[in-house]
Amino acid sequence: MRLAQFVPFVLSPLLFAAGCTYQGDIDKPYTQKATWFSYVGGDDIRARCAPGLTEYRLIYNAVYDEQIRSYEIKGKPGGPAEMVSRVQEGHGLDVTEISLSDPLGQFGWKKSVTTLSVSEMDELESLLKISGAGEPITKGARLRSDDFYWVSALCYDGAFVYNGWKKTPEGFEHLAFMPFLLKHDETGVEVNPFRDVGGKHIARLHQSKAEKRKHFDLEVSNNGLVTGF
Image (tube, rainbow, N blue to C red; front, side, top):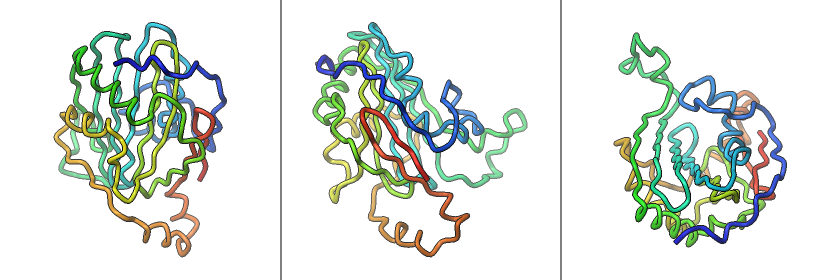
């Protein structure tokens, strides 16, 4: 089942509090720092979305300082696609992973690449529709970096749709695509399970300005993303 009911491509502006437009190389730590908001907002996918292209990006923020997962699927409508899975855990320096050939590697992502068949793409797109990802239904959702949420930036055959979802008391059972992505994730990194992090939000009130700047909020707007610290 294809996402044929995607809404028409909308050129709504994305307002960013900081950073630059993402143009590739999210694996590089300096790229992530400079363009993270644009990457999460799917700025680059929106710009190149055109007929004959399938490109999906789904990101799981499992408390930003603990784990973030990214899934990128690229192909053509009705065909197979390449799926790139990435996982990043924490932001500390792990001296056991320092490589002389790639000294910045320990700051980056664990990555795997696999091919999704036509039938697997049919399944994924059916799950995306069940989850409501085929239409912008989550306008106004505020997403906190120190909590759990999913976002999706989807281009199917010239139509672009953006969405974001906070966890519910049951977690993410309402997102039918989540088990599919985790099943095809070959990074070998276990998912950070959702939990109540209410204490983290309360702690912000007593943090210094420097500590508060480590956290940021995102807001889903009109088929796009508005960001702010």
